[in-house]
Image (cartoon, rainbow, N blue to C red; front, side, top):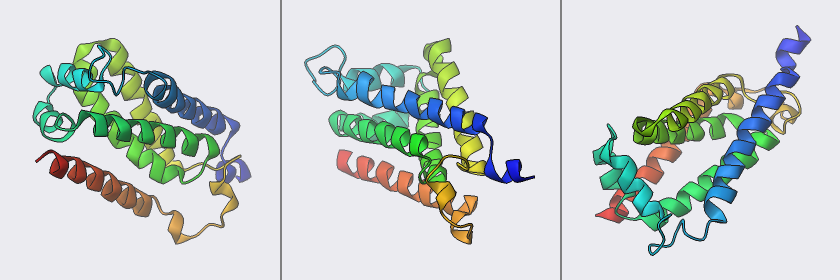
Length: 178
């Protein structure tokens, strides 16, 4: 019974793995990639958005939200991925991070799954991890576990807060592109 409330060490391992995937994606694949934000590079985020949009069921969304400001979109992706990684690994605001990461993975999945099994698999798997931590939170070896139980740790509250935050970022990008 105590184990159920505290979570298992498997939870910690999965949280650290998910966090490290986000850190590697945000830091190594994007922040330290000199071509990611450079329009003169073949690795430019704008080309990636354009390529993914071609076969995507959310093509209109990508062209109206992400494509008008690819550098800003890229900067927000870097900030988001690194933030998700740090929050997952530390177990801090895990339900909020899980909500925002879930939306990010859903957009990645709908944008790129048509390109092949790699994009399909990793994003689908991470959506499952995001849902798990949205529902269960981080219990063992986490900053969240140091806070007393209260209604403030409600899944509905953090899902709503994360959804509103994500929606505000999408609206900001859309308005910036008008």
